[in-house]
Length: 467
Image (cartoon, rainbow, N blue to C red):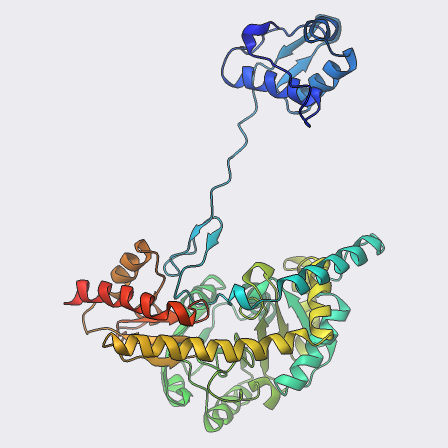
């Protein structure tokens, strides 16, 4: 090794000398100054050249050997590996998610109007940091063993208590399963039900990715129209009389935001019991109802045929990737088999932090604060869009903006995304031919002060595309 390799040591730096030596040799190998098979100086020679201890060079060589960049050969010396390992991949930076089409790869960051993303400015970050730190201490201090794949007992108890109070759903903690978000819950449920090959009622319009999940699970998703009262039971009977299950959003229909009427709820339960069928209730927003007090969960009306699914991703943070499923007693054993084999609960550390968040009352206070803020943001955005000549309809935590007939809302949404706006096109939510063009505009991350500016930008894009 000589100075031509560019090896320089900074004795004032905080980085250890052995690391500096290893980094210098790694760079020389990477740019070709040290060819595969080239022999490195001995520990003693390089230590003398650099004026460091022999042990310092030895540590550098060991680090390079651990990285498979060099091969020590005893008395024969140390040589650069003839087959170098593949370079370490460079992480891609966070980018905005288009929020339609296939799921993007890599990390994404939200844009204005994006659905399914709670407002970061409303989340009690300092409190959450304290709870996570406490959970980390508790986790480190606990016995080293495999956690319960169905979820931590404390969190399951807190979820059961919350559902009884806020959603009118009485259940035992043993019926609650903590999952990797909504998708983890849905995947585990479909495996536990063992209904592959059957028809499944699916709301029209309905969440596109849930429709895809049904297909991947081997079911035929049959679109059943939705009106102001919810899913049309008579239409479902006509289209798929032998369906094995129905996947519905009775609390706030996704994406239209309507609440299923009591008459439709009773008819749906009657249909389920008549043929030993199942109902999966996607309660994605829980009690986060802006217009009025949220209706009780559908599962509160029937403990035998309704499977209740909820999530913390849309009320706390998508980064949690945490949801839950409440199953009838007869499904507890099959669900335990599935989660124990293929779909265990998230890390206990996060579960314990969420447990404290619920137990200390922070979750309910957080929901109340979000309701007030989201209602204000929704009203501000609706008023701003009205000022631009666009009438909108309330749709849960979003506004539905109809577009002129014949508009390619997918192409227009892509153009908006290029302009750093994230409206979701409405047409992909329809499986049939009766789709209608429009935009779904999330209100959670549109602050009142920015509503007028964002509405004007969106209106300009629409005018440019539709005239």
